[in-house]
Image 1 (spheres, rainbow, N blue to C red):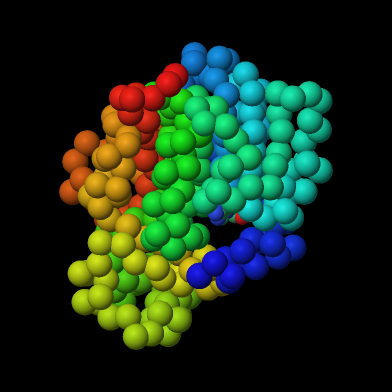
Image 2: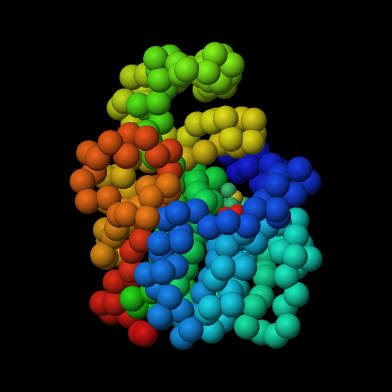
Length: 267
Ligand SMILES: C[S@@+](CC[C@H](N)C(=O)[O-])C[C@H]1O[C@@H](n2cnc3c(N)ncnc32)[C@H](O)[C@@H]1O
């Protein structure tokens, strides 16, 4: 999956798309408010920074901001978009699977927004969690979003594509047909049985391989090294208290807020 994804994230049309985004998603705005008082003393790592959508909101509020991306083209777009007056704001090319350019216990807050973690294999995803664990201080906040397999499964029926607008209904049905075509030989049973799965979804016209995971499984992945895990559907400022809530069937991606466990670590 690596080559297709890194090629897509280096493409000029995709870089330009991310470089013009500027609004926080509702769940991110809720997080910013939650951490606002602590941000001035925090060193922040913004992983998969893309074209800098989140930079303008967080960089002015934290003590030090480092934005990284494995796409040199994305990093160049950030450098063009933001002047870096001093060391308090920096952009670097770095792959989340190998953060060796950063020391252990360097950051108080690590963000991996807009599902950037979903563009690597399952094994590489676990590697990323290990790198986050290494470069985060004990108690470091980690906030990231990931595609929601539960919502994908529940949305992939022809009945769900039908609405009051005939043109939209037609478009939705075409997209549903293309989804099954791009993901042959996947079946509804494959989806129902999987805890996590890599699919070609319609984002950027099926040019990405994307990891989807059920929330219960994501909590399991996090449980060894992270505590205080909270879930926010991306369109909501309210955290989910009941994993069977209707919104978990609807929001195609959800945010996870958690903190690195402190046991056995230097702060
Ligand atoms: C969906 S875009 C989001 C960009 C930006 N965070 C935003 O919210 O607008 C995902 C970003 O993650 C980056 N990315 C994907 N895998 C990565 C990895 N292993 N290490 C660093 N960046 C990665 C991509 O290059 C891309 O810029």
